[in-house]
Structure formats: C-alpha cells, structure tokens
Amino acid sequence: MSKTAEKKTAYNPPDDERAERLRMEAMALRHLFNLPENERAEAAEALRPWELVLLAKDLAAAFRAAPGMQLSDLGALLKRPALESCAAELDAAQAAPLLDPAHGQDPEDLAEAYAAVLATTDKAADLQRIREAAALLERAKAAQKPQDRRADLAAAVQSLEAAERADAVPLAEAWNAYRKSRFEKNEAGPKDAVMLDKARGAWADWFNRNLGPRGGLEPGRLLLVGGGPGGGKTTLGATIAVDAMAAGCPVLFWQLELSREETLEHMLCQVGPKYAKTAWRSKANHDLPEAWADLLTLPKCDTPEAAHVENIIRSMESQARKVRQTGAHAVRGLVVVDYAQLLTVEDRTARDARFEVLEKAASRLAKAAGECGAVLVLLSQVNKAARNDGNALAGTSYAGADLERMAHAAVTIWKSIGGKPAAAFEPGDTDPENGVARLLSFTKTRGQMFYESEHGQMPQPPGESKAAWYTPRGRALHDGGTPKQAAIGWEE
Image 1 (cartoon, rainbow, N blue to C red):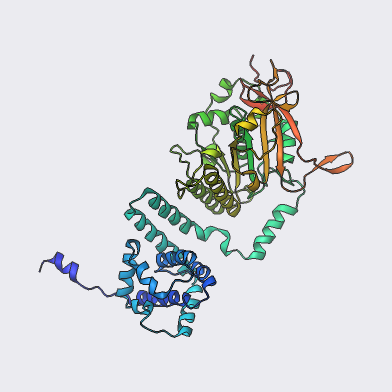
Image 2 (tube, helix red, strand yellow):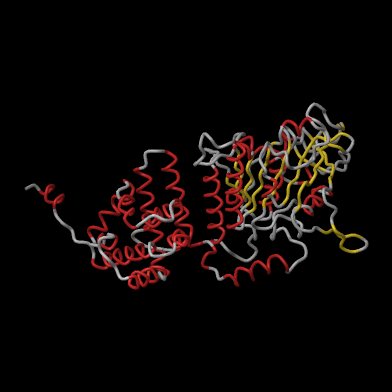
C-alpha cells in the first residue's frame, strides 16, 4: 500500500480534551429540545460553543422557523453540505449517539452540560470566536452563490469584532459612561458630538442647535438630509464630514454615485469656513490635509449593499477602542451615505418593494451606528411630487420610504424664493455676490432643544427654517455678505 493510501485510510483518534468538549457541547444542544418551544431559539443563541458553533447557529435559525422541531429532525440538519465536517467530528469524538433520539439521556446531565458551556471562560470565548471565524471563512470558500459567500465573510468579521464591543460591559458601567457624556455639560463641545464649525456663521450655529438637545449629533444618532437633485445635499454632507475630521472624528464617506476624486473635490471646497466664497478651483487644487490620511475612509470599489457599510462601521468602532486616549472624539465614526436610495441588502428578493429594501438597509445601518457609538448621516432624494410643490417641507416625502421615522433629526434643503422653498422648475433667488439662496428646514428634531436669549434658555420652536447662500463658483454654503466681508482669499 502506498504512503498516500495509508494517509487516506489511517485513523487519527481525536484529541481527548477536544473530544470531551464535543461531547459536552452535544449534550448542551440536546438540552435545547427539553425546553419549552418559545424558549428554544433564544437559548440556542445564548449558547457559546467552541466546536459546534455552526451547528448551534443553524439550530437557532431552525428553531426560529419551526419552534416545534424534534430531536429526530436534527439528523436532516447535519446532512447539509455546510455541516458535513461537523457531523464527521461528532462521529470521530463518539458524540453522535448523544444526539440520537434512540439513546436516552438524563435531563439533569443535559442541563448541567448546557450550564457548563454557557459559563464559558473568557479564554474559551476568544477561542470560540477564532474557530467560529475560521469555520465561516472555510464555508465562504465553498459557497457557490456570491450572496452566501459575502454573508459568511460578514459573519466572520462580526465574530472577530464581538469581543471588543460593549457586550461584556456591565449595565451600570455603560449607563454611568452615558450619563457622564450626556448630562455633565448642557452643551456639547466639538469633541463630544458631530457638529458644524461655528466659525461658519449664524446658519451653522442654528443648524447645530437643531441636531440634538446638546447642540450636535451625539454617538448613536442619525441625521436625514433630504432634497432634490442639485439641491446641495452632497455639499452639506461634505461640510459635516470636513468639520468632524477637523475635530478628530474618523469619517466614512460612502459615495455611491460620484467618483472618489469628485467626492474629494466636494470635501476640499468645504475646508476653512473663511473661504466659503473663494473660487472652487483655488480651494480644491491642493494636497489633501495630512490628518485625512488617518481619519477619512473613501472606498474606491463601492457597493450598495448595506452589509459592507455596517462592517466598516463596526471596524471603525473597533479601531476607536484600540486607540482610546485622553482627548479622543466621543463619536466612534461619522458615516455619510450619498445617497440612501441606492442602498440595497443582500437578502432582497424580487418580491421586495424598493421602499421596503431601502427601509431595511437604513434600519440596519442605524442599528449598527447605535450599537457602535457612531453617527449616521443619510443623504436622501425626495420624490417628484415634493420637488414640484413649492410648499413641500414635510419630511415624509423621502422617495417613498419612511426614513424620517428612524431619524433623530431630519432636514430638507431647497432652493429658496422669498424665504419659501422653490419648486423644481423655479430657479430660486440669486445674488451676483452671494450665489443662489438655499432654505434649510428641520422637519424633525428628537428631544427638546433650547437656545440662549436675554431671558435665559428658551425652547427652540419646532419646524424652524433658516436661509443660507450657496455659491456655485465656491461650492459652499455661507451666510452671505460682500466679498470684502468674506475672508482672505476671495477671488473675483
């Protein structure tokens, strides 16, 4: 017999310690079938096995789909191609009989095994994540469908990142950290929240006051920016991103339509509020600021799938935890999506309506931002009816999807005529020095806002609007004024 044949036929007994672990995990999984049907899926998801992680995940999904499944159905689950290696390991460890309904098991022994696996040590949890990610990567290699491959890759990334998220932080500790960041100061500073540089003028100060109770977008918040084509959404998103980086907050600008170079041009035109009316050729024709190298992520090979944006959000949070230091920004990443209607999800079907896909994608990103302490800014088109109606200010017209529901703050930006929004066919008020008038209107603000007045703090009136100017030659929003009042560097 050849050495190759010997290798193929030789029996390699499993490591005793690993085999024992496999048997204990098998007993823990069998215990799930002794639980009430409405508790099985949750108990399976709470289980943190080392070796049988894929089987546990698939079993949790099976319980969600069919809570009343029997132990005898487990055999069919193990015959799936993705679980062939798992079934072989159970056989090699002599653990398969523990999952065989023909072999009775003491319920108390099964419950003890479940408790033992559930009480996994930190080291075991780390090993589990490593093995889980490795198994998912192997499964991704064998996947035939692109969506299955991407789903396994995304799950592997999330598995590795899980240890660095706040799951292990005691509830009281998490709440005290939140209290300290939110209630110690009435007004957020540039390092506490994402906001516009107040040097941009009265319009920026007004904008900040409408972003949240403390005058900015605090960790976990979502801002929705709506408008028609050419209304200034990308300019506003770029301004928020540039000022966030100036305060040390990392930024992901997920551009789904423009090229990377065009997006950078938009962003460079927003650098330095004093140069709002300087010609864009002068502002953009410079090297990128050095700080952007570490703070800005602008994908070249963009994809509209929400899962990719979610993975980067979680990666930004992980990076922020690693470099945690005094003076670091409280927001673990600003994510700007331009624009929301191009987003999709991996598991969409032909029967899913476009607005349902958009709402699902936006909801996933909002959830990831909330969990990771990031800020999400969605730039959104409004529907044609809203564009053609000169009085349309309602934020419910975001291209058919109910995006405003999940936002903490929502603002629309329109061309303005006499202080009112212009319809799509109207040019808007123009000024030879200041450009084209824009009207910003907050259609939603979550939380009571206040502003300082001669009578002390006064409540911010809801639905307030503010006019600003957009200079096409400068590609920036500003308060207006003559060229002399605009800062140094104004070019005729």
